[in-house]
Length: 119
Image 1 (cartoon, one colour):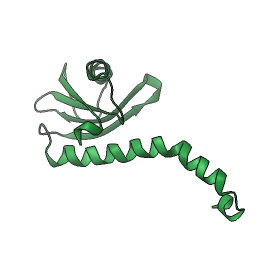
Image 2 (spheres, rainbow, N blue to C red):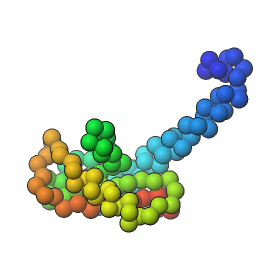
Image 3 (cartoon, helix red, strand yellow):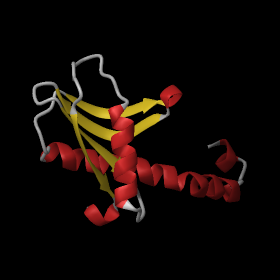
Image 4 (cartoon, helix red, strand yellow):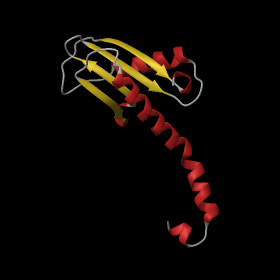
């Protein structure tokens, strides 16, 4: 707002353009979360994103079930990616997770890599 008040619209446009990919990614994640929760692939006890910077784990979204000892994770991308490579990375990150709210022992881990083509 301060830049706009000083008449620096060029800087405002530049700042918005720089942050647009982050905004697009967040909006895409919100849309996919709603789509996932409308028809979840499994019953679940836990749903959410995971950000554990110290362990280098970032998972866009996951569902976990104690009863079925199963985690289903999601990687959400804006553009085209090699889904097999991304899925292998996702499953590897998911295997390193621990949960405080539910107990899982060597859970079955599945996942999906979603992008704009899956809308």
